[in-house]
Picture (cartoon, rainbow, N blue to C red):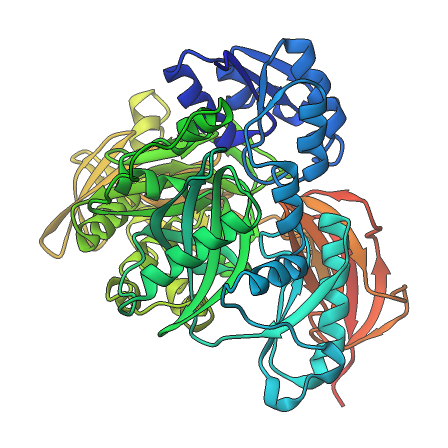
Length: 623
């Protein structure tokens, strides 16, 4: 029996594994980077071991340091979580060679599925249906569109959809460069791209005695940058017979590589057609929806299999429906730019919330932008979707910009509610889903709450009739509001102020009474779900940047600069000039206009803060 487990990971998944370990009376050991010294997973573990450094390369990707940490802390077993070294066969071997229990599949099984090209060969031999790779040099117009994919790794890195033959060569190069940077392997391949396909996967659990269980299906079609956003179980509206074929193919895949533990076999489904994509030899981010529907604890099953237990009888039967949404610190309207800063408040009551953060924690630049996974379960799909959308809409999230509004709108979109979504959902609907719908009365509520607070604490010194002005900035632009403090109380044009306190303002608008919860953190004010930044009454003219300035949209690292780009280079509008990497994602900074690069301040490897001046492009004068 395992009595102590080190989790070779961080954040949400480390906290998730620790939760099951506590329930089973298993001692927990965390590892942490310098950036995670005060992170939640570090705080909740029984023991924690420091990994010197801040970046993943220095810390969570150093297998030898993690094995040493396990031995030093007296851990008996290692759970890899997901990401980082979770699908690294050499790390699994190092854990076993150190005399520790590896809570995962055999290294040989990991190795067999590590390369997507090798995995396809194995699955083809086992009779699993798949899309045959194409020779990049032989692709014709008739083959388009095609998908360029990295042979190693995952998470959407090194993946490109190509719709024009002239773009294939450059996209192959770009995908290879990204894959080399992310996984240390620049190998890529090409396969047909299936339009309107759905991403459907099967959760499997296998013991070391030859039994393989398939735990239903999950639909993970809503993706951004080939990374999942909303997942559900079971996959809705599958054609007759498709689920049985998926189970059969997933089980065959597991048996082919003598799998043990929890894993996921992913497929592309289009009508009656089923195509093998890859097998993830680890626990998936979206495993909670399967747990909810089957009433199981997949982490507990992983531990049980690692202890040598048998899967007796038949797998449990599913019941009901579960939907999960990944809450990211990112701005979908700004090319999914990741966000950083203090998470003042995170509360999503009424549903399961898996997170690696607590109120007051800092969201840094080194790791994934996911804040939490919100999971709703109900007897039917419609009820589960409604419950999740409502919980997210009512959630209190104070801190960096998140994708919360996008999630709510996605869950309520007709294509999703009627289960007609596919992997191109956001390609079609992102613009509509991120269209600004500001609450016009949120800035006024913020101003009235502030005015009440200053009046309450003796700060009010103006004449009763003197109008007051406040300025705020939000994701929707700048706002200026006006109000008066009279002998009868606070008044504002066009609305009736029923009450105003520092934390609650009640207005009557066109005969409708509306409540506004107000919270302030330094210069940030949160009014219901609207985030506002307090602006000075008069703008500072020195804060303006020169025309053509390229500013860092987020804190991160300069990953690379366009080949041959130097001061004096001629650039065309839209040319990619600089690539920033932040929170495991790469972001292109493009030329805002055709002209000349008059300044280049960015250098590869440089750490930059949001708003840092990277370069300046002087626009060509009009002819």
